[in-house]
Length: 219
Image (cartoon, rainbow, N blue to C red; front, side):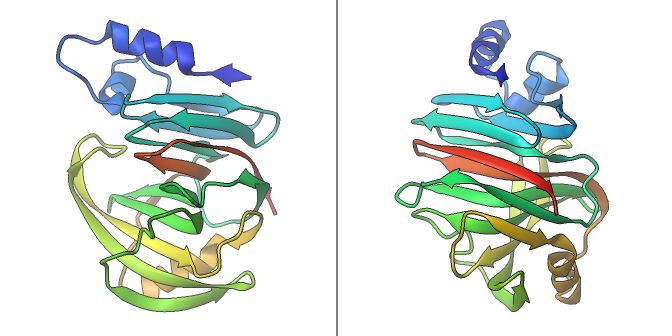
């Protein structure tokens, strides 16, 4: 199992007096925030506030706990991440804190960050946005939204980009996700995707403490 606690400590110590973002540290080769493990791609990102203990497990599994973070996100999946049907299971009991459990990924040209949210805690990520449509898929109903991030960290450094969301109305932890259904619904709403980058079954924590143990696989 790969633990990142000591790596994060070393990364912070190695940085200059000017606080560098984790993405900048990755670009410098200081923090191995992405890689391959047991046949799966993994990605791990944190803004280095609070404590995150992330561990890759067998196959497509990982275990994580976090404490007093500002923001972190990580998980296992595939790179590149073209449309596929995936299945996942595990434990995620963060309904009373600000956290998401989502199939999460990126495209380039255009640069897009996307979430298929299966469960969320105290904050609905679609709050304050305009709903494009609803989507019936894999036994549930999802609401489709778009938000925009301005001058924020991305897989291409600091950038302005859109976020696409499918948020499941009835939360669940475990099941199948047919990604093509979501990509088609986004496209029909005028939300264009680009070239496939990575796709992971991610846990995210924002200004919170929590834990999760998740495994993803091809369905």
